[in-house]
Length: 128
Length: 459
Image (tube, rainbow over all chains, first blue to last red; front, side, top):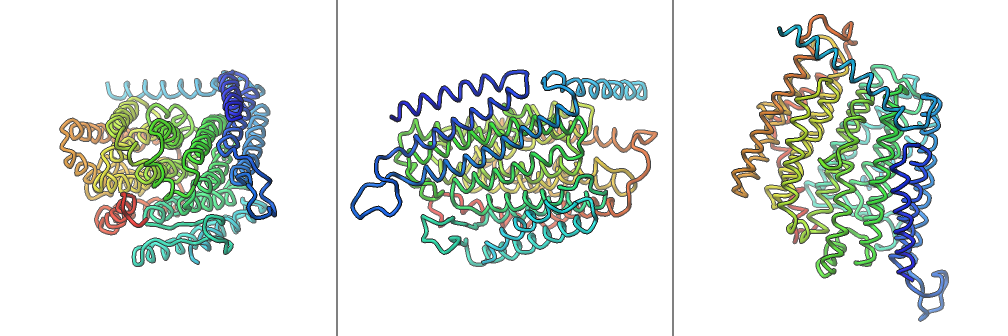
């Protein structure tokens, strides 16, 4: 069972990492989502015990470990919030830049570089 | 008691202030007042911890092991105090300059709540929860200003740091798997009997997660874009308060939870720190933009913290704490001063520059002194040469920046900034000077913090 969890986590992380390296920002978000799911699967897999649900258990009966479930729930909520935030950010980027491609975002940076180069040129002229 | 209140005050008011229009002056000043109150509470807490040792509170009256455990020791309160101070300076700066977006004050308070929480928790998973609270607030803050560069910075910052957070979460899962507990002190005890391979893997996961936050050399790629792209107050918050998460995490998790692994890879950590130090300094010399040079300087400066951590022992850990505090103050001062113009500002920037280079009487001197002491304790000549080289390079790039920003005629940025802004920056500069002239409180607190981290200490 743990092997199944480990395999699922590995596949999720691998696909997430692959998507993260894509140019399209929406795919990047999808990649981060998959990696967050990988973390959840790992948490559940990390505390895998057999037993009844830990609510009002008769004495002496084995219960399943409630902690990983609580952790997974918390992480799930946090993951949901962060992904929502990320999507909102991508939406804003698309509204401002009119594109969801990573390379087009860097165009602004090239402009800034050119400004810096002009400044350096001015420095050199001043020095000479 | 104070412990829970110090946590509750910024969090509750932050949740309320997010809903209000932060562009109104009153809301901005309310946020400043709440931060000041949090700072005062934390100062009282620090005094109590200094006098009576570390404190522990289990929230909600649950038995220990079930409820959320808050644990205030010297290291935690020092970092909490430092971060809230930086947030206070940056927020006051932004209120004086005029807040542009409505959520700014609320987000800063939530960030303060998250940071205070993660510095004062005794549980690995609660650390993650507070860490996400702080990070989520800072993701939104990075986009503050709403320009194209800010948006790009926010996108990069969010994507990279979310990945870092999930690596942290994976390591938390691993820790639970091998030790069956998430309380930091218990993890430290049980880690000794765990399979060494598993322990090393988990320690590496935590190390990567914190290095991403801190912007250490192989994980620094996101940092220049973000620091240079965000607005000055946000850059000060990111480098002075949010980056503390990484430094604190390395200091807390390394010696307490993974002492054996830390000893095993101590040399490798020193080398990584050294590479970070030289790389950051060389690129800071090479770059023209002030904000970008400061960003590379930040990469270089955290290298010192890592070197000190790798050296370890009481002297190394004390040096790491002192250097983290000094570095956070320096960066706050420099980012705030670089964004404004006029008389007094150049002087404040020069104090920051001298502090980064480690010239007395600025606080940076104390940090460098502790670093050299750590270098002498391990008796390593290359390390001392390296520290000297790093200091020399930082002197070069800081004054290159100073020259470019303040000596160029005609002044590039137009009229002088309002007087209150300049006075605030001067106050931060005076604080940096004061910490250098009278370093005993900082040194004593850092020494106590380092003692608490070493094995055999009561916590």
